[in-house]
Length: 636
Ligand SMILES: Cc1cc2nc3c(=O)[nH]c(=O)nc-3n(C[C@H](O)[C@H](O)[C@H](O)COP(=O)(O)OP(=O)(O)OC[C@H]3O[C@@H](n4cnc5c(N)ncnc54)[C@H](O)[C@@H]3O)c2cc1C
Picture 1 (cartoon, rainbow, N blue to C red):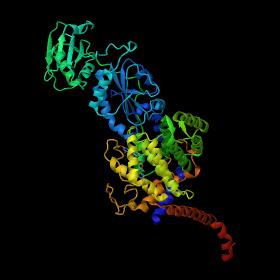
Picture 2: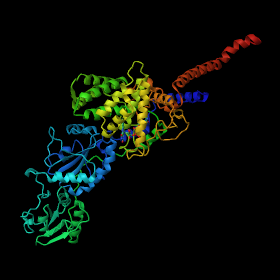
Picture 3: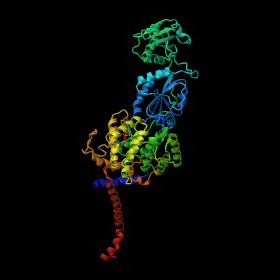
Picture 4: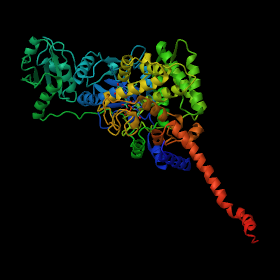
């Protein structure tokens, strides 16, 4: 360690002591204005989208026992796959908007804690999950709606058309917009087509629907906004011919009340193209559709997050800081949003939860109340041999939190806050928590099991992590990287670091990436140049020649509880007091080793002693000189 390092350290410590307890006014303002993490307005869809946003408050009144059907997406804001699918789902909602009197396209964010009960009751096992809830739908055991196993927009449309056409509407769910899906038979004729129709209906469109297609159903659904037109399907080519339909080039015809029939050739064979053709024809006759009614329940307007720039600046300034706020958010989200959402926790899931809580109890970054909470929760879960429900877990969690309140010192992400509320967040904090725990385990002399944290992590990710795709990737990577053969606790720290870097590499440039925080190999050269065998290497590929000893030292430093940043913490008094001294000084930890820090402390103490001595020497100089001078010069 150079003398310059020691001077920087001493100055930094002085500044730290001087600023201890000074509030962060601008951040306080940010916290006041930021919405809570479970705020449904932070979901993946907003006012500009045609997706109907569901929450626990409007779910039943919007999609249960209605006279129209609903396509419901159960998603998690923090699931990368859900984020990637969101543009497609928005397009589905836009595309099927003309069907909205018969079927709406809706979504519920299962990452919002308030929606736990709904997502649990519907036994959502992976994200995103698409379910069709028909008119009159009532949830019940084994009755959670019909699953759609595709994420392709055309397939979604076709499957839904089939499901809607198969509905047998009861009289109590009478819907005047519901098309007549019965296909025409040889008994039908141009004049009989209008029987039973209201006088508003001026035309009947007859459409040939080849076997195993849904083009006629789709056309009927696209035309529900045209009260003057009724659509009828015809499957038998012989019957179709009665309506001037030529199945090869004129599959569509329009019949008026006088019995006149005109056939048409749409551009392509799909319901939307047929609807386009009909609307052109009707437009020429000055017939227009009803405006489409959007069934958007009133929703909380998306909360504007002010002060976000300061937060991002702080994180950019201190790239490799680990923040207390993120560790807490990870734990809170795990307990409230992930474990609580599972219907039944039994078998492997129960074991995984017990293991996770045991490890969290040992390496818990929360304050004293948080320690009690985790340890009591672990005791609660351990008493169940067979199963515990997510609901029981949630009730116990809330009871304990109320009893031990306050438990958390912060309420928002800091290092994991994204440049938009939809980016980063929980998955970032979950990585951070597991890195933190592997380091604490490595520093714990009592722990003999090199796999304790990795095994707990593996079980958690497999059984509870709400990002289904991430979980599958992680499990595959774990077996490829031989997780169960990690020989010691330090290698466990490095195993997780390398695995995380592999994920960073795979996701670099992905649609889920926050442009403010591009995915890079960690640590960056400017955070730890000694971690690179080639100094200053800026290479982003996995071929980097790492100095693993330096990486290990670096990871141990940044996850040292003494150096966890408390920026953004609102209730510092809840945390361990000894960690107070060194907060927000992570730059130093990247430059100095543990030994350096101890030497610095010694030097600091030494300086203070020297200053006191010097002061004594000068302050009492005259007092001591006088008698001495008197003896020598004999003046007094
Ligand atoms: C187990 C797991 C698997 C995942 N798999 C997928 C997936 O398959 N597809 C997908 O889209 N998303 C996946 N995610 C989410 C994804 O990895 C990120 O968490 C998410 O995109 C947010 O990224 P971020 O930029 O906030 O940084 P993150 O990658 O989440 O990193 C969080 C913080 O950890 C630190 N860090 C970064 N790299 C390392 C490292 N190597 N060692 C130590 N610390 C590091 C940095 O300070 C960073 O800010 C997964 C998440 C987890 C927890």
